[in-house]
Amino acid sequence: MNRKFLPLVLVCLAFCAGAARAAFINGQNYAPLADWAGANGFRIIWPAHNEVVLTNRTSRLVFGVDSTQAEINGVNVRLSFPAAKDRTGALIAQFDLDTAIRPLLSPSHYVDQKKITTICLDPGHGGKDSGNRVGFHYEKNYTLPLAFEVRDQLKKLGFKVILTRSTDTFVDLPVRPAIANSRGADLFVSLHFNAAQSGRDEVSGPETYCITPVGASSSNAQGEGGDYGPTTANRFGNKSLLLAYQMEKSLVQNLGAEDRGVRRARFAVLRDAAMPAILIEGGYMTSPVEGKKIYDASYRKQMASAIVKGILNYQRLSGPLLSPAATGMSTVINVKTPG
Image 1: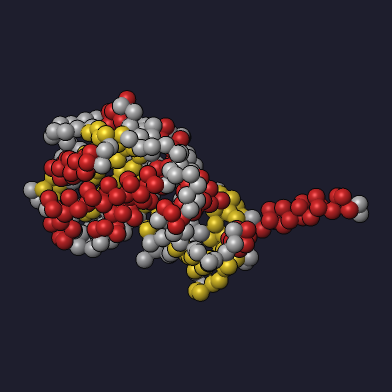
Image 2: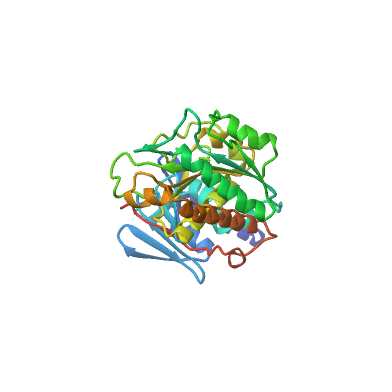
């Protein structure tokens, strides 16, 4: 064989071997995790039958077979498709590599080097829309004072803050992101509190939502399927994911709360936002312990501080090619089986 063609032949053989090992599951292309690990400097081990661990000098990734539950640097993140396993080993959806794992491992490659000056806060519900109700407690009566506290703390730091409502008034869902768009907001943060329909004594902790990637189903209970078309918010999908990650991380760490994770949803207040946008469920009003905290102004002040820290941590990602150490984000990923 002519030696000048040898490199091309080797490349073709390597490509064909990789393609032969790839799988098509759940309507998605799955990549062999061992191949991805090798290409990215990870060592792979199997500590348990349904768990695979990837490690290198700075990072640790743990995937649970048949699970979408991911734990990234101590923060839960829902994948769009479960990790899988066949006779050749563990598999990961290429979709999740592209829309979750890569952005969270290399955040500086997915954010703009743009100064954040204006933030739109969206106190959930209002007026005839009371939101969740627990006894005499209405969600709308706690999202607004939380927004005021976040606003005051942000303004002290020099940010310009826009509120979608400042009184107990009803604001249509599509109007809320429209306000942010028309006022040139750099970030949109919608504030809510949750309620459990069952297991009220057991469910607590914040959840942070960002827009669902095109081609995936939402992870909220009323989520739309993967055939839902692109929205304005999908143009900012990676940035919204990074904002949601930093927010959930800050809430859990600063409140000492249970971590309900970063999730994906096509909420009406997120779909039309022309900037990074998230929706925070700050905790469960139905929890006997957490509910009392939510009703307490001092706890909401603490939560507001955690929200501000999440925004500041996201802002730091926009520096020129910041390393994980510089941003305070370690590239540690744990992906566990549910339960």
